Image 1: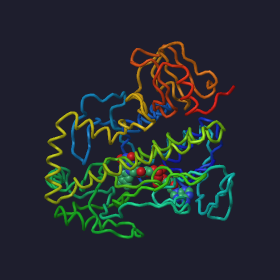
Image 2 (image 1 turned 45 degrees about the vertical axis):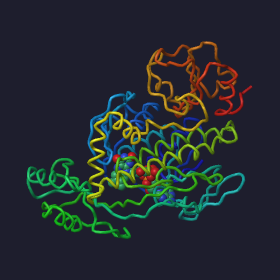
Image 3 (image 1 turned 30 degrees about the vertical axis):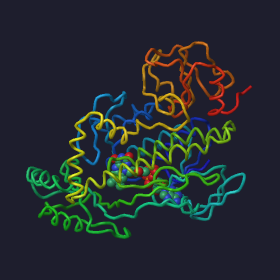
Image 4 (image 1 turned 135 degrees about the horizontal axis):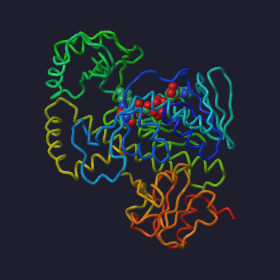
Length: 471
Ligand SMILES: Cc1cc2nc3c(=O)[nH]c(=O)nc-3n(C[C@H](O)[C@H](O)[C@H](O)COP(=O)(O)OP(=O)(O)OC[C@H]3O[C@@H](n4cnc5c(N)ncnc54)[C@H](O)[C@@H]3O)c2cc1C
């Protein structure tokens, strides 16, 4: 199995595949891991996934926990009541750190990562995919997943369409030192941020500030921004450049919003930024990629191990494409709210009022944190297709039972069995009083695949998700 790209999506996918003993080779274009430090936010569902795989304790010391308030359109609101998660906070963590931790985890589980190896070509046939690298070397694999980011070579080589909107605006972001006292900065910044949401100067370490300003226009991005670009834009908006100097790093990002029209072409699949791009408002891109990886990993593993039901792999696109489409939509809405035009500013004020209602606040928070997702598994109770929170179970907590990426039957009836599926699915009898249904079948990604109390019905659902019984 080959994965192109060792960003957060590729590393997470590699680890998920290794849980099922699949041989994994990750090809990464860059010779060194990224050093460009931007703080990303891990939202509730991603934190839950980390807990589900036993990774959270390793990650937490490297991040800063912040309250899980709604940040919709950068409108601050405290966390609403009724957040049913043990991990109801936002974890700010430098992207290079989360990438390193995920890569280390994948390697510990046995994935092979080869750096300085970019995928430049591919051909597929009935048995597998031939992957071509920069130096002409060819590798053969049964499947290939393009986790190679926004400008994905794999997506382009497949000829998969990437419809959406091109960048209309660009934003400069960087870290640098300033030449004026902190109090002077704070007062000016507070005043400007009343109308300009795409603007900040925030302390980011001793003597260093994180600076964000709109770029002068949309460029072809072949040239990296300079400190002079920052000075000009600061002067244009704030009337002063705050004496910025000695940049640590400078970058530019656009607000292009696009979604691949297919996630799978034969034996080649796309995940993460390779499949969807959008502006960073709400901090959802990395979260979405990690969640793609957890949705796809066990399905691909099932395919490779030979027990996947016929249509299992196609459920990846069926489930994740609508999720990404919904994220893109919430980002489009948030982007409008950042406009300095009077119309969007009025909508922003109205939405701010509405967010005082807990239900509105919770609705928006669920969109951003991905805890409201319900995959369409057909008709059934509301729980079907949703994630189960990390409830207390006999001898511990639920997510502690999902570290190995297997299915799980939580059975209060004490008469059900996973029979011929016990090599893929665990069974916990008399799990907990917190579960208010007779029994629940969980997929390896923690989503509810079945709710009921009838063995025959359960067997049908075990077959649907986990293939035929072993004997
Ligand atoms: C300013 C900013 C702030 C952000 N804040 C947040 C946030 O708070 N929360 C959040 O969730 N997201 C945030 N994001 C988005 C997040 O950074 C991305 O969504 C995330 O990095 C996507 O991960 P990925 O693994 O899919 O792709 P990438 O991180 O782009 O990784 C792709 C990897 O593939 C490699 N590669 C490329 N081409 C090839 C090739 N041909 N062969 C082999 N390897 C290749 C690349 O070198 C790279 O290592 C932010 C983005 C920006 C710009």
